[in-house]
Image 1 (tube, rainbow, N blue to C red):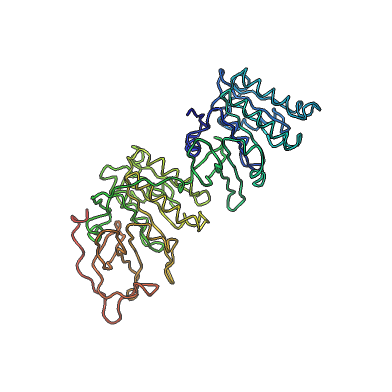
Image 2: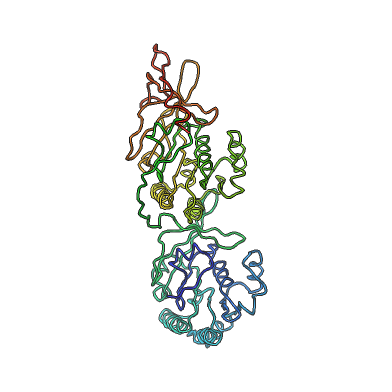
Length: 492
């Protein structure tokens, strides 16, 4: 079935392939949701000299004002006005007393649809037609319009500021082949726009509310990652080195490829250093890597990695490493998922770091949604054949709390870095809390971060692992440790 692209690959994906040729689609939403911008964007994407786009306005803003508003968008091409895109004002037809049945309007739209063979016909706003005729007359008018335009092969796009109640009973919606609902939710620190496909005949669309941003490039749509059906993945009987000296020995020979690993720890314990070690190991082995950070900028990470002997800048230049820094103020779950999905699309990226989960949970502010989101995000990474390394901050003082309480089952492996009280000094420990389907060491080990994460000797008399806010050496026994696990050669 032939479809018309919106010009936005992710929106076409949400719609099940684009807009069906010859269909009637209602684009509904409150003022400021982006209806006119999106409709104009689709017009400029598809209009040609042979098959133009005709944009009808009813009693909305003057064309000169509308064009002036469009000049700030990159998709706007003034040379296309006239030869490719034509604006037609229907106000005079609506004001004519003989147009009470909308026949003049319908005849005008249908005539142009047959004579000019446009690729797209837009009526902005179709809701305003309700002010001129009664309900039964409006039904007949919309039925006549939609059925006649459908024979031309053009997509008929109806725009309107419809409420949720009007969408339940309006004649436009019962006749429409597709219904796209835009929303605008005021919330701090930034407002949130959304897009939901309520109805799309002859297409398998993605459900849920998808994130929308309006930039100088126009409307940008980011699919809700939970809408994707997870691909079946076959467990790989292969281990990859973590890059953290001594950790592979505790994990039974390394991390199973394709696993999602969670690293818990308080601020300053070394979680980010562990991320750098994990990525550096991949770069050394010629793998492509993706690093997503919410605190440290790309330049900061390059500088820290350089101090540990890894040239992240060179890896970025040869496109072996992508560092995506997302400031907290602009962190959006769906935007983040889209960045990852597009980077992983060609299946050449094998290591992904997210530092850290605490910022993601804070940005979500949707506690009911977050478990499903996180599950879907892990599935996207696994489906691409990549291994995921995620950090999450726990409290430094007091009982351990973290954003993944009750969600650790989503991760295959969990590694815990903690502080330990030893006489008048603070040290660090590391242990593997769990590994799904794999044997692992159950002990608590010394941990050093001086030259990167390094596992030391096993602690024999440490207490408070499960019940205290901080680990302590057993009183009067001293600090005892066995020899370090393995050699440097074993842990490389």
